[in-house]
Image (tube, rainbow, N blue to C red; front, top):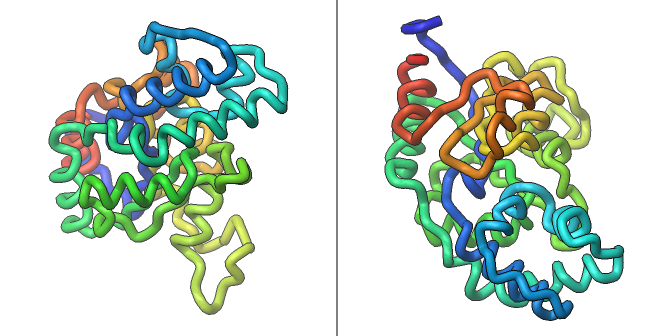
Length: 237
């Protein structure tokens, strides 16, 4: 398919590890939460798997916390993250320019993240890229809508709802699934795309483990923001 022109009318983007590198803020806040539980974890690299999946699930999976402990850990995490960790974050070089070019090319863009929506909006404002997106979707602070499939479903609802289509009705027959892409750095993004028949596009510069995106079924894996630019705008693979 080399040189074949590609065209997506709508593109959903994950946030962490896709639009920006949030490692310092996320791992620092995880360390803060674990310390409140009496767990010392000095190796920030060991905490990279927390970048992407729902936070509570990660505390339970990686540190064996029970329901009550995981809820407490999430509370402590947000205690640090909401005013400090949220800004320990860097937009990937070239990303703002790519988003603006996509919008100028007529693509409708959305953010679909498992991070709480209130934090997603603050981060987009911080990076001054809010105006690039028609729709911004995240999870709720109470933990609902934290699975990627739920986030993607909500993003599709908001993108295609109008006065003639009930907001809750999904899937819609008129949604052009075949011309919508989901871009993300973890297997959760790929599975979320595949659940709805979207084009699953992976990015290797994020936080996926070796072979993770391939195993999940990514249609294409961009090695860099420049590579993603060439693929999305020029159809080059």
